[in-house]
Length: 354
Image (tube, rainbow, N blue to C red; front, side, top):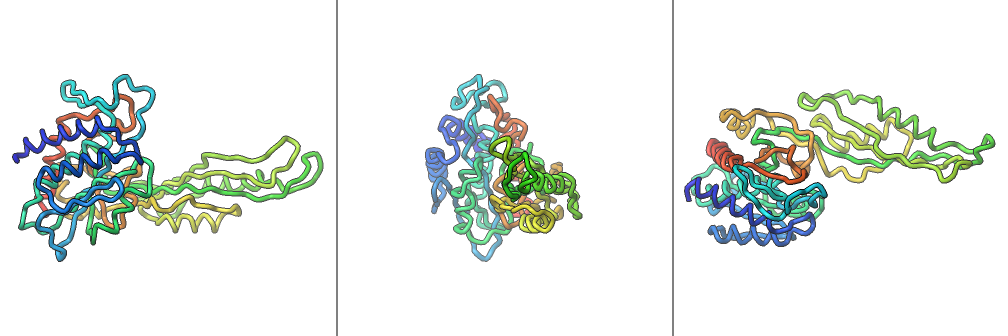
């Protein structure tokens, strides 16, 4: 196939994906579409677990390093502001409208086209592993995380998310912690009890004012924001417990576990992380894939949003088709020219290293 044919093929697949509902945890039909697409294009040994589909290049050599090409085929639910049928792919001029067109269907089909371009190449310095995965939008445990143990040794990854094909060389991690300040109940009219709200206020002030010593060149400081608070049962009872929630955006200068430990050293309340699995991630600016992108006029930046990149323990580059500002918006769309450009750029970048 020529690159133009690959592009037209990718657009047709994206239209099929849009017309097939794939809300997180309900992506079985689009997983079947992707599995069938790969098989129809001659890919052998296609694997599937839950609603995740993956394969490796025809001349896979376990002695060579492996590049993971990953994006997700699940979507959020369409919001109430849609004026179009979210499951009806519609082309108007250069725009293709439909739910998941931008986030992240355009990256999915562009990475698949790129994988097929290299699939039969016998002389590559790297293997390629394509993994189109599920449950990214709700951080589910049956998405990328569930298939990583089955993919073999991976050396670095390109994660397809809408970045206007600019290179996000780092991504913030995310921790959500629930905090519990403990006091002692008593009657509000008498000098009784130990007010848990007042105890919580001291710790909340710490969260508001503390600055972590190490700051990231890309992101600056770790950001902590108290977002929920709940205490008390009635006006005349001193509350024995006050609960509050903190949203924490972690930079590449700390691990999530380090951040939780620092918090516990400074506050009196009970600290209960919901999860520490969404880790900060990065790739060295001198990595060959980053250099390849720079040589093609791409720029680098730090991404404030969280993706499946947070589940990887290897260097990873977030690079994809479309614009993050369109993600989860009503009447979502992607430019067809962005898909054509994306396939070309993915291939050109990999040509420089494989």
